[in-house]
Length: 84
Image (tube, rainbow, N blue to C red; front, side, top):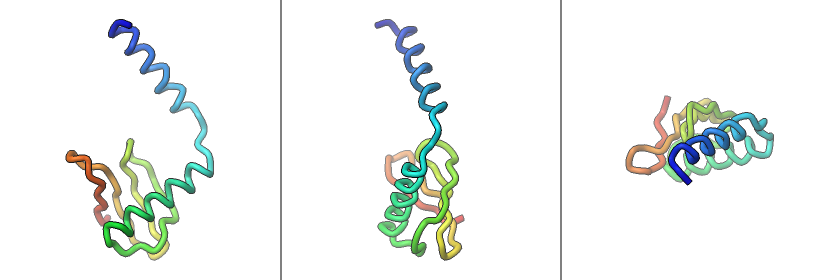
């Protein structure tokens, strides 16, 4: 397959994925994952109650205790949580 064909296929798949509605199950899984990441990094949170996506692997997580963190993957491929 040539480069143009791969590009077209990539664009088509991306468009289909973006057009799919997100489900509540996916949201619950994301909130649990963000809660786990923040806890493993030793930051106070309790439980993540909402998450706002900024881009792929980059979210603003709001905790039940009021803390907010930007959780993302840095240039070295490590997950980082920055207090907001």
